[in-house]
Length: 273
Image (cartoon, rainbow, N blue to C red; front, side, top):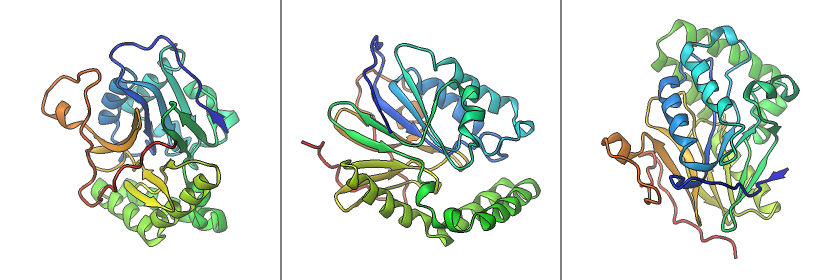
């Protein structure tokens, strides 16, 4: 596992120590590519580190990419060599072989990443390693993905999203991955952990660990992402409330925490002593 190192030369407009997103699924017919391009353009100017926590791609069939999908990839790529921001890619189960595609984004692919700003130590990993359906029945996963892609091409986007959501719930992945990721994080000495994979945004405390799932960018907006700011880790939504209202962001301004209406955030844990 790699651990965050200090990044120098930060601009005054930086607001967040780290932003984490997951499950972009570029190439998917239901990817929120326009919204994602806007978000990425904003994010690279408002954080010290941007972590993409798995499943940048829906698959490696780039014939499915639209101009918007390539535009999102271009935003990521052109910011990987900057001195004032670090871009990190944590692998996901849809991303393909690391040695084949790492050059596409311009960064090394990690299995997991430990972010540390001196106040928060956050373990970041995609979460598919805790998914027993994938690990125990890979052939079933391949069949299910094939069926879903057929439905995605043949049915309206809303139906495709609905099928994906109920499938994830049927697998009980959200709760299972929350438990296993929290236990793993605790065993590594982390009190904060974030995953993707399930596509269901979630904030929960389990066994003394604050777990946040960053959801996905294939659902109807607003779309979720995780931020670290000082001694806080929380879930936000894009567009941010003040940006959606047409207001300008202000450096150092405390952003409003916005959680999905179906989820309730537990009290924030203090930073580890």
